[in-house]
Length: 409
Image 1 (spheres, rainbow, N blue to C red):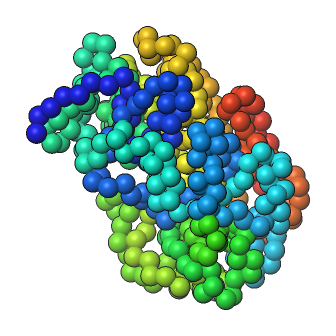
Image 2: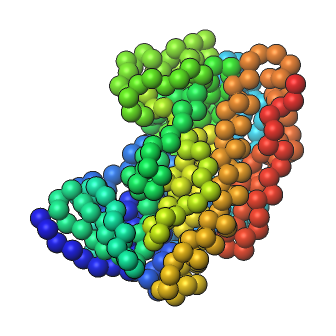
């Protein structure tokens, strides 16, 4: 196949960030074309948590009501000792969260989120089975070349192609992924099967020195629970690829002797893949010529704050605003302004996300005891969580992080 089409804005990647950006640009008068390498839209990963900082923007994009039908708002945020089950801290969510931050926190299946976004964008704006092989700068436009011989040219190209971004590699000239020292196991279980689990409709962290388990209810009726079991493995990741096949029993080793609710959850579903939790080091410039990065392609970080998708959605608001401000002229000033708006915020969230794992995986001793005592206080919530969720890119309320340092010795 050999054909060329011409567009104003082309978005590479029909994931959460790419589709949300198409809606943000449409709101400001620009119809973007989204190209996707897969033959059908299917999100990698089980579920996603949407926090208020992103849901407020999805409301602006006109999809909040549709998402509410396929999402579940947790009753509480709970931290527990992974071995004893003792409650270390509990914060009400639900209405309290919505009143505080202006929108809900939702758990939903990634496929449902992608379906709502893609239907809002319209499949006529999404080109499937387009595997990007290269980008070529050609004067006042960029040519996106694809494996089938076709190509798309555009005034602006946005790389929204995820943590393993082809566009980022083209921009930097190398792959700069860094292993975080942690890996994960993921799964989804029917809520009714978790007979050992207290507070099944809460968002919960079970913590210990060898790892932690995060889980939350998801879907329109909260009938399923999604989990991410994180194993602390400080040695280098030597496997090829970010996801490797494993024996189902591998998921249990880091959690031997933990509370029955944890082991029951892990045993309830077969898990045959282990995910390396990778991050990308921060880069000063998010663009090259007429090509700019968005979401994980710009700032992939570990998932311990649950902010990957949410930060991508925040990016869409800032980038769409800045592109609208240049009105079709040279996009470089828009890219510079967008990066300036987003760089400090995403770096702060990246640092905080990395610190979560350090704090949750403290070895037994005085530091862990100090952490446990703090988890039940309002200070813990304000310093470590509230500033993330309270941020509103529509009014640029600032980062305002609290104490991001680990528990002191």
